[in-house]
Image 1 (tube, helix red, strand yellow):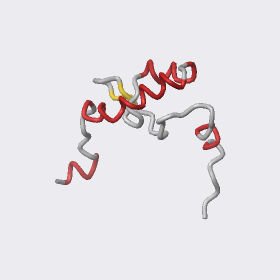
Image 2: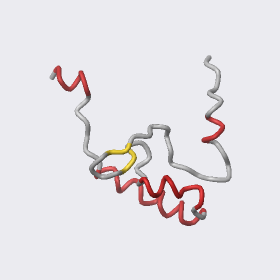
Image 3: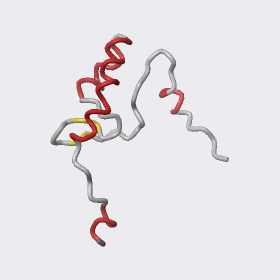
Length: 80
């Protein structure tokens, strides 16, 4: 059994809900994070948003999935 990552405590703070999955890469065309689907502006302002505004943003996130181009898969994509 592996030891818990101490940095995970940052992501488990009860006072701020966050969709972050620690896959923080901004897709250049849409400027959305490929992990959580938030914009750079939303990520930057997240800790200053009210709980209601964060909930509104989180409700919009599933609809953004189609905006990010699917990657072909590195080596696996080249072998096909």
